[in-house]
Length: 123
Image (tube, rainbow, N blue to C red):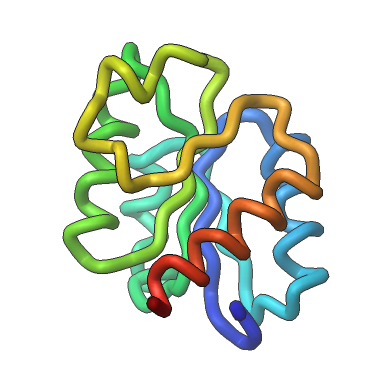
């Protein structure tokens, strides 16, 4: 599914990002790029521009994160949102096609979401 591809993780909490990295590496991801925020991600853009997946922290009060998700989707990059805001999908309806995981997301829920995301985009 992600074998040899690059994945981008944008998450402020290092332990959450590290857990996601381990989960992705277990799937055979070629490289994982971790950024603390969208500005940091843009600084490292050369490392992830051709990524096959991005997992991005998304909160309503962080508009730059929402903008990054929109940018990634326009580039046809698969995106999974990660949030502590259970009401996020109702407030950002354009994210309806983007899977959203609530923090803390277990490895099992990440794997299930990845499987569903890749299956839906291969139909």
